[in-house]
Length: 465
Image (tube, rainbow, N blue to C red; front, side, top):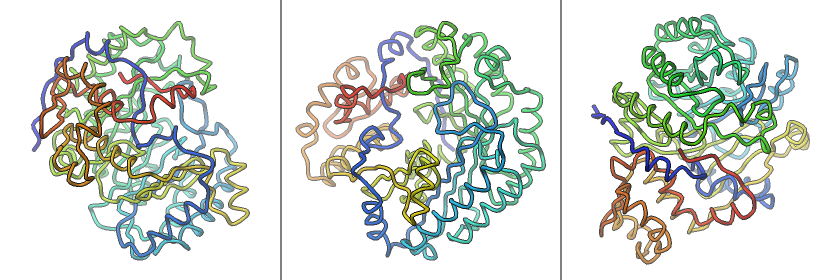
């Protein structure tokens, strides 16, 4: 079992390095995706992979929500019209059929499956059953215990019967959107949910033999303070989820129109957010959670903590994951697929998504073909974000480079972090110190050759802390 550590965060360093930067769920990031990448490029990637028998990971995006959460930056469609689901499921089936023409899915078991949104539980029980049936018809779903089948849940949209159904459909991991338990904060973000109902739901989930329960939390929301955050942390620790994702709220109303409903004067300032982050790290690590990094905490016996020990931890478009399948097929509006050196993203609007499928085309809007340099830097960023250490001789041998010569600019940018004992550089390794765990995004930014270009083009990112 992995032994966890209690961190004493340095508020001075947290404030110093609280800058904007990518979350690195991919490298290069989505800011580098281009419209010149099209369906033919994606088809070529699938054709190159046609003889593979490696497992697959599936992501299905279900964009519908009954009401708007003001903070949300996801690609969602707010509606009370349930008939939209019928249309959407028909087109998902068309997309699955087109993908099956390109991959030998019978030789490639789906070891990982994730339904995200939006609110996947916007679908009723019959619709969820139909979607899983369609998926099983077009792909080879894994039946062994080792599979990871997960779904995002808005606790307000489900009951015990829904949980029974999800377990029966094969899901063994659930993620609950909790965000905050304070009523004032909940009202300000238009997401009021009863804590007693959440407590009851968690208790019932525990009886249904799910392998893992995750909570999503957000800090930096309107009216949050260290006092209110402490109350939320008390409740979360009491409910004892296996995993916790605690995200920094990024207020970007110019990009996400729903955020315009939030009064910026009610948001905590930078110093207050730094205080909340320090509190979050301290409370969860003192409660026995392992700080995986980049907003994620897990129990010591959780599979993510074990994966970090045995070398199978990875970071992808769903955050931290176990490397059970290197190829990811994304389906549904705005979803992203990843095959070796290719990223492909579907159209972000239903209109264009449906138009492409009506023309019997995969609904790819843009993407990227990675260069050798991209693959090298992706490897560096993956190693640092997952394992907090880079074996320099190993990297030099794999890519035929002189590390310090090739990354001289990055090393120069890392000098302040070295001086602040956030990272240590030796002849054989680049290692993140215990003090440096909260600053993984800042460290990875030094190896991002596109970051400055993206900023000059006006691309905006959330704060790293």
